[in-house]
Length: 252
Ligand code: ADP
Image (cartoon, rainbow, N blue to C red):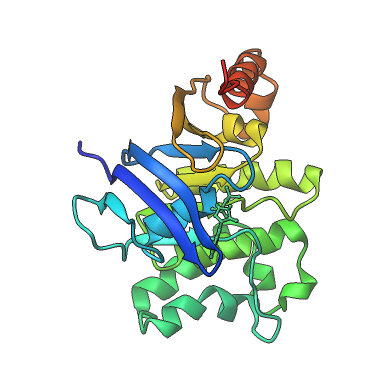
């Protein structure tokens, strides 16, 4: 099977009044259907820029980004750091907002949303306002909203960073479970190495800005939840490996 997403020699710089900020340099990797890829790197290295390029919000200055071999990005869903749920809409109407705007609220979409609300424990909160939900539940609602148009690839930009530690562990398990059951391919950007190791099949390690790829690490565990991975003996080996990759001294 061919790659779902393919980045070939992608480079990007921001051009502002105060000059140029090189963000990404010669990034190439592929994502295959069903994979969970994490991208880690130091703060400010260009991770969010990478997602903006993949989603089509920005265009690469050099190189190409292909989705199923094409330039069309309409089957990509993007979940941001904050849940961006609107307080004046109910949970249901928040979840269906994107579908409404795109005039895609057909019978199939309605059924998909109803099923996800039931399966992922939000049915009771369908008519509630976002402020009535816990942080974890809000994140689940935001994920269902991203999944509602049935995207083939999900981009997750530090989706757990606003949550406290315990909620974060729980939401990681929830999100991994939902993505596995919905058979989605995902690309997660995070600066949290433990999060990357607990969720990913492969980890792309970026350098300081302008980021290039330092390494791509295969992650293999017995089947289990992110929480179970954190307690597995291999976990600390992966952590040390990643830590070393991120702290290679360029001057040596
Ligand atoms: P990360 O997500 O890894 O923290 P970003 O992709 O947000 O990094 O940013 C990469 C670099 O590009 C940073 O130095 C940031 O200051 C700069 N940058 C981000 N957005 C803009 C912008 N709109 N204009 C100019 N520079 C930007």
